[in-house]
Image 1 (spheres, one colour):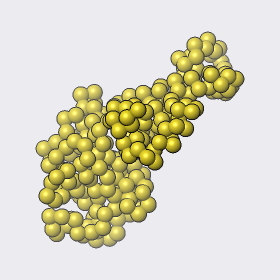
Image 2 (tube, helix red, strand yellow):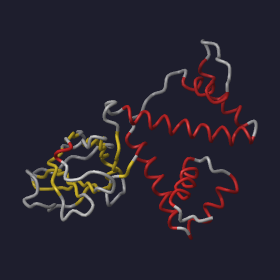
Image 3 (cartoon, helix red, strand yellow):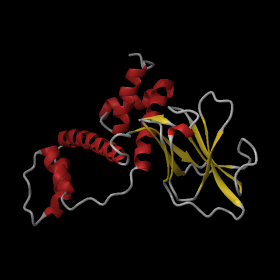
Image 4 (cartoon, helix red, strand yellow):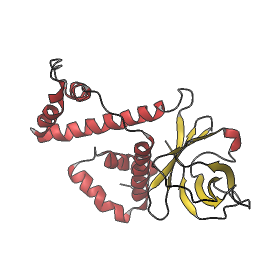
Length: 243
């Protein structure tokens, strides 16, 4: 089997990261990762994409009937009495645990439903005519923590969203947002940003779009860098990947 084939590597990596690749097949793939760069890259890509979904989707408190609905969709369970929805969660898990076959198939089905739900919620963050096409996690070079998420719509518009509470900016300093498309001679400033506040920019402001576009936020003097490039330290940096 040629694991260097992109379509094969992508399919196997997707099944591995989603958890639908089980048992001996999963252990075999794990043993192949060290010797096959294409597989490693595909697994890293799938992991990054799902991580982007998680970082982009806000927390939502499920309704009391959520577990009931999941149980009914996955396993054809009869609808419970209206007065007792709270028992739905434990019952469906016990049903799965009662049979290894149910457990394997149930987890695979649940993983597929979960990923589909996350995709639909993420698309719902944007207007219907502007689905998200590319996303970048901007992470701290020191801690690897994600501080901001860049979303690029199908039309090329950009939305910069804080994903974690940021600390105060030192007096006399400012946060500046930069981009550098692949192959560009140098970075382009996209302006100053305020901590913990989203920013929206039209496509016309961007020098380039697509995959592997670099975005970063640097700490600059108040008013921004005096040069046409960053003059201060990089606080957050990342590149776009396609959804």
